[in-house]
View (cartoon, helix red, strand yellow):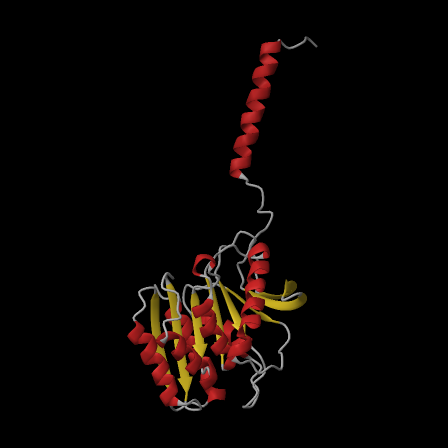
Length: 264
């Protein structure tokens, strides 16, 4: 067999390369990280407040490593003064899934801790969740839209977190607080009246609500003080549930809260 001219061989190689490229375009390689077909709940360990702590995260179907989805953080401890509710995480997930167009990661602590939180020690609980966000950002989503949700004393922690985060390095931008107790509500009213709120915050949303089990006069005073302050950086809405008790109102509060903070 005769040797093929060098020029012909070169042209043949180029033609094969072009053909291979065309074939790659027609039959793209599968995504190395295809979207998940089913939802899942992961357990993870993060470092916060000087110790390792376990969290859980709900991941909707369709997630993959490059999903740019917001995250919702639930602060949930055992109820001290009422019958304990243990399904807040599941209810918050259901609420998120029911909102059209919303896909978000839902995160909380794995342990349903037996703690009664007051305003004086709220910072350790705030800081624990800030540490949790760092882990989630590094492993699940880089979306900086983070929502903080709490009920009862945990709702008080959510409110004080909103008022005390460093405006230059804010972690959360959306807040849902329901049925925070008098100890927190009066503390927050005092901070507002004494102008102890940073004046250079930007683009924050807050939904506050309360049930018939709360002290209505104090809750109304809190709402009035927030509205009268007329913060230019705050988009605020409130709701009252006079026909629902504390153990009954949280599912409605979660729905109203998420719909407000995630609406355009």
